[in-house]
Length: 119
Image 1 (cartoon, rainbow, N blue to C red):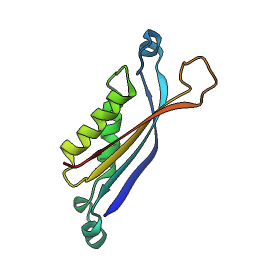
Image 2: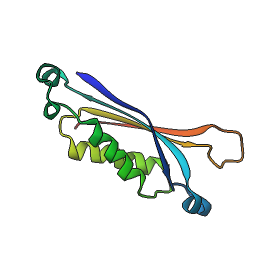
Image 3: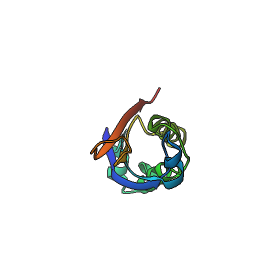
Image 4: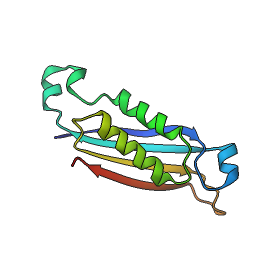
């Protein structure tokens, strides 16, 4: 078993419950971790034998581009797409952070973390 991580994916998007969030947007950070068997790719040195992190990044970017009120909804979509499109993933964990959230305080980020295990 092995782990592939994409850390600090920076995206500008339009999530949130407030009307102004849908108009002006905000900065987001996404961190993604997937677990898979890396034995074959370690021996073969072939991209076809592993999880392509370019595809993982593409999934994150595409799902972050779809507006949601809640970060949980975005994270769920990211996890579902990973399992639908990459059958060798055994576990995926995603953290979605809204940077400088409009909550009336000096808060650097609000983060939700969700994970899914292969059924």
